[in-house]
Length: 319
Image (tube, rainbow, N blue to C red; front, side, top):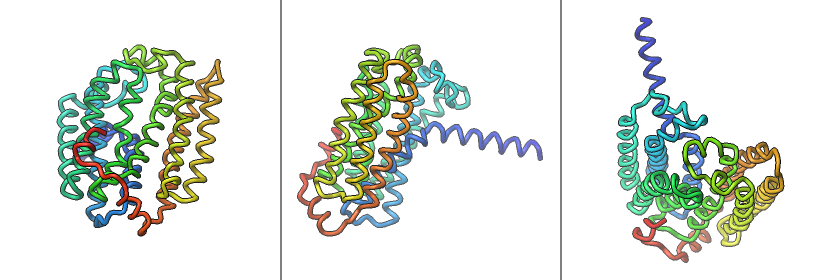
């Protein structure tokens, strides 16, 4: 009986390690943006198909996380923050992680194609490839602006969600893409400021390592100043209401205030950087939650979408 209990415990622990490989914390926020876009889009996707589409997007995001951890296992082993992850910790073999990532990636694309459409499936496949090949394997170890360019992968889930519901890409999802794209650098650079020594030891040229803390803090402020006006575009274009506008304006002002304080703090800036990192997560979640809560739908929304310039599959593949 004891041996059976031990076996069950080991299996649960192993399952937990495989789940960890999918980076569930990162995945949840990305999937939430996709859910919001899918919900507010003027499509008629059946509830069951919509649930399958969300599941496929979540699995695809998890697959990207698994493949990222597989490729970055050598870096993870050096950094304190990541040294205990399943692969460097020896609890999951690299081959197992690679196989899991590839199976999840292929499965998610196929399911999304069947549940929604080929445009959404193609976007999901492109997002996974971009995150692994362009960001993880190429940019991350070569340029301090890896997050800026690679952030496109993290900004694509709302575009995928919209395409799943409508079968095309309109102006609205591109605006949502822009918001997440501009949010990504200040979010990750705030984290990198407090992990610059680890990144330096691992040989990853994050901006604080290459350009220094002062330059990084200036860049954080610059992107924050671009982010807030971009966050108001849904109101300007008419697919968000007063609730969204109020939250985008007030929380945007707080975002800029924290970024400004960080840029002006010369010594002991770690707590401010940590505050900005945590705040940025709440900011993006609340922004999309407000978009969802204030969703009106109806003919006006459909008219706006039909007026947008639709983008074909080939253009969508370029992100």
